[in-house]
Length: 256
Image 1 (cartoon, rainbow, N blue to C red):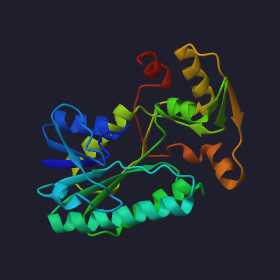
Image 2: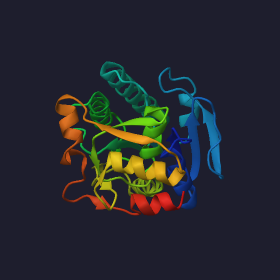
Image 3: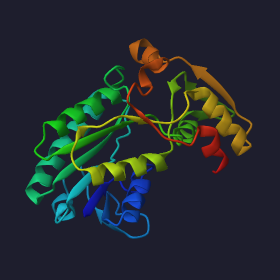
């Protein structure tokens, strides 16, 4: 099977592409820069926002896995991005004869009114309403997020980290799960996946700092409004029927 992984050089896209190669698939990755992916993959250049390069990238593809992301604090911008790009991708994928459209999503987006989550919910609707048979896999936050948030929120010797409860999972496990979804064929919304242990995000940040040998103080702050209350409660945790996959954050961090 030929599979196109959009955002295939990213935190989740890369292990997804690698897992697909290991399963014997012919894998291409699509990025705006044409960045090389894991060994055994073909690197393609394309832009979801403009459609440039998409028709060529989709030629001969059986399944497309969308791991694309947008960095913005604007709910309107995020909603527009995910709705427009998913609709465009679905239309072009149908024309190319693609048989399966897989989207990576987030646990709890239907419960927490955070702008990015609202946008991901809009993406889910767009793919389910789209012309190509689809599968949506919701996952919890990644172990890798601790390092990302430290990079984004550090100011000298201090880091501002939101108070949030999460059940994080390794991106490599998400990649394996997405590869399984590809092999299983279109199934709509499949069971959520998450990590093995409930964690507190500021504590993960502190563990990350200690592991790096840095002298940095993590300051936990409560996000305002309903979104903040939702993130600091059980709404981001996988519910009944979810599949839990290791390793724990501590075990994952020890291997980094």
